[in-house]
Length: 186
Image (cartoon, rainbow, N blue to C red; front, side, top):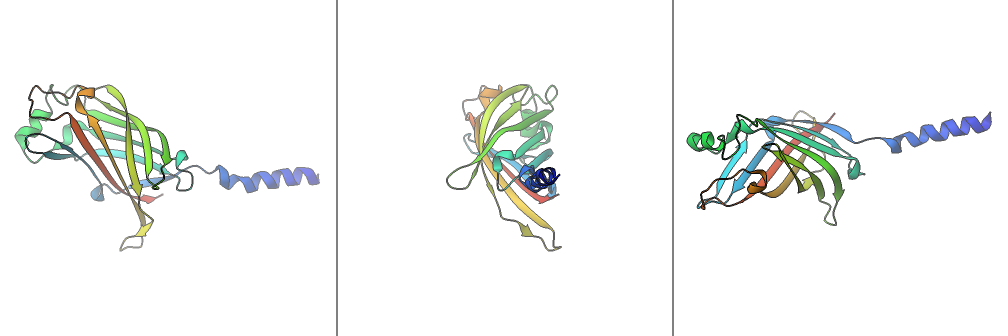
């Protein structure tokens, strides 16, 4: 009987170590998904509609998970005519592919305490492995006393890998993506 009691007690005490990553609620008003591509003049833009899921474990980042769904037709570069062109078949083809997605496959910390996030980015139905470098702020408190963190991640992709192409030589192949998420623990 005593042995059973200690087995149950030991199992109960071990439960906190089995905890999974903590979900975070994204504040989309304070978050952004931006990009920059080199052309004759660098073009900066953003996607105004996206949804992200962040489950983050500060002590064991390898248990964390991140995913996102991006509405490709929400692209904004500040020039409406260019935005409409970017929605056409030679770029995002938003009639056929309304969404781009990202799903993390592995997360770890590097020597500088950054998160290295490996994952799959799918644009125009083409899935490519990418790696993001991310920083995570300490927990802060807003003016209403609500705790939050800021997750900032960057990566560089080759748009031709996703067949986001155009025949103009003035548009460079590399796109830098910067994601900034302000989120509160659930």
